[in-house]
Each structure stands twice: as C-alpha cells, then as structure tokens.
Image (tube, rainbow, N blue to C red; front, side):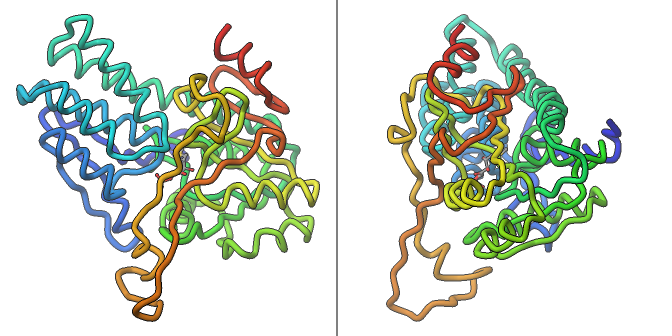
Length: 337
Ligand code: MRU
C-alpha cells in the first residue's frame, strides 16, 4: 500500500503545548488551522464542528484532557465539559473514559500526553488494517458509494470507510467512486471530495437524492460508510441519510458495509433505539454557506444522525475483524469474549 500517496493528511496535530486543528468549517475554500490552548477551546472546536468525525472527536478530546493537565486546570471539570460537547459519537466518551482511567491510576501530565498520543496512533493503525480487511470483501471492477466524510479529516489519518475505498482503489478492486453531498453540512461535497481529489482518486459527487437512481443503474456494488456508534446488536448510528441508503441498497441488491474502529462499538448500548441522536440548530438547514436560502419565518428539524438496523448491514469491519450479517450474538463473540 502506497501510504505516501494515500495517507498524507493530518487534521489533528499535537504541538507540545497546544493542539492544532485543520478547521473543517472552511474547507475546501480555505486551509486554515486553529490552535487550542486549553480544554475549553477544544470543547468549543468539537461543538462547532471545526473538528468532526467520531474518531477525530475522541482524539481531540483526549488531547483536551492532556492540555487541562498541562495547564493545571481541574481535570474533573475538563472531562465533564468535553463529554457534553456532542452526544452521539461514542468515541468521545470512550477516549475520555480511557483518559479518566489513567487519571484514576495516578497519571501525571506527561503520562496523560502519552495516553492521548497512544489513542491517536492506535486509530491510524486500526484504519490501515480495516482498509485491507474491507477492500478484500470487494470484487474487482466494483463501484462504490460513500456518505459523509470518513477520511483522514475524521480520524487520525487514512480513514475508515474512506480508508477501505483508498485500499480498494489502490488494489484495483474499486473502479468507480461516488460520494453523496451529505446535506446540510456537506461533509461529502466539501470534505470527502477534497480528500479524493488530493489523492488523485477519480470520483463523482452526487446529490443525496440521486442515490437510489444510481443503485438502480447497476453501477455500484457496495455502499461503504463509517459509524458514530455501533450498538451491541449491530444497529449503527451514522450521519443522517445513512439509513435511507441502507434501505435503498437492500432493495437494489447493493451490499452495505460499515467500517469503524472498535472504539465506536458500544456494547453498553443494547440497540439503536437507545442511542441519542444529536439535534443541531435548524439554522444549518435554512442557510447555505451563511446565506439564507429559505423564506424568513420558516422552521426546520435538523437531526444529524440516524440509525441503520443491523439487518440491513452486510458487513461491519473493525480492526478486530469482519462481522458479516451482524447480530447480538456475533457482536458479543467479537467484542466481549
Ligand atoms: O457530524 P459529523 O461530521 O461529526 O458526522 C460524522 C459522521 O457521521 C461520520 O460518518 C462518522 O463519524 C464516521 S467518521 C470516520
């Protein structure tokens, strides 16, 4: 695998005394970095989506705790502030629990910095491994559709679903890549297309509403997405619009793959019904790039995740292995054994 070509973006960078984040609100027009010097600034960056994507949120939060320790801030306050930043992606809680365990074991600021770095490094390794596992499921000459942004920007590097696509393209298994816009925040249009163009991977953007039509055409064999939380029975929360892709995929005989590190698996949550779905400001729907597009006085409903039931998922790929046709039994074998 040519990682020099396919793994060059690092959106979360520890600088020794502050955390540098590539501001994802401004891409692709501007590549501007923001510097966070304390846990409150990291919390704000997560809330505002300057850093986003389940694994990246967890990594940033871990660095937020390391910063709090370095600044002599209250670690309890930092942990609870960071934990409340966003509700759906369990990687956030997972990373904070890991930092909390180190604090409980008496870790000092240097040890917490070490733990945050380990969380980041492990995520990159998991992504590279998942890339190989996921790509091996795809037959040569396939077409794929992805949703949201699951690439280097959303992780420590390389990506989850986008990592599988990178590996599949490099191995000659994937011939055509389609990315949905991912309204309203346009993670697909603004971020995934930016990553693919930087890698020189030919890809076509589609309107989210073109997905069923694309599947009917027979051009794609797989929908490949990431996850924000996978419940104990395999139900998967991911970016709004994922559920309707899974329904359409099953109808058209297109396979559906979820790619996520084990830090996204939440065995304490029994089913998708128990996952809190983040509701964001309706203003995100009523305007495009700050420009109001909907009549004044109109309201909107803006859930930013949905849950795909396990029975619509053909494969869940984590760094621990591939689960085909997930259910509570096989999930338990892989994640609780
Ligand atoms: O609201 P976002 O942009 O943080 O949502 C991101 C997603 O839904 C991704 O698909 C998911 O976090 C997986 S990222 C590897």
